[in-house]
Length: 311
Image (tube, rainbow, N blue to C red):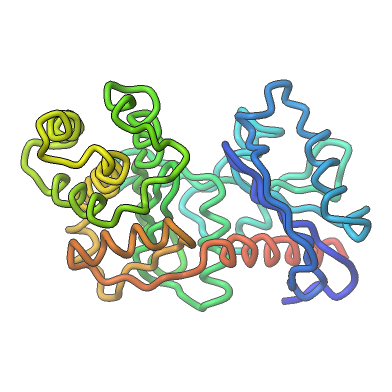
């Protein structure tokens, strides 16, 4: 599907960051903006002012273009609560449930999705549903297990284009909390460097995660190992990163091994490299899908469905 007439603004607006694309009628990128304008950074909740600034960054072609947004901007803490769909994952369902902002009918927010985890517990997501819809629409994938890493990593089982299982792991958030606000923090002075540069340390963290006593013990083992010389202090952040990601994957291994196809990994850059390394360590096959492309494709397709129905 394509929208031939004008530009479309697609925005993935999360807790800690914002990504915005100026797309032409066929979905090609004319301009892109990214910044630390997540909803948690906007203390006065003046989302309209942030959006106006973003549109200015995208240039004059962004003026008066329809806008489609996904992510935490549609949460109870965001601009307007867009609610949750139950298990639905397709473009058409998300487009039909997208809500307009009050007094701005050319701006829509995509709802999140509610499902149950592999343990049978309630689970939800916002933003990742749009990436999943983009993957299914652009790559014609209707079955499989999807991994969407992030602050809250999502593992989603899709059967016949519908979500049958959604399991969230607070991997990125626990990593940051331990790194910045725990007894481990003084051991990690290289806070700005990222945890991915020391491959050996990352592997040590993956091996630590495979132990029997669980994450609460293993977190302290990072500290004890550095204090006693078992681990290199310069590798502390990488070890912690490997431990966090390894603990996540360790608990999903049985579900992954039950799949007839490789895991679809929706990630890019450093995150893609870390998860590919972890999957290889645990002997799990995966197929990489570009995370940025998936979100953009999903937003574009949803916008086209909305605009097409209005015409």
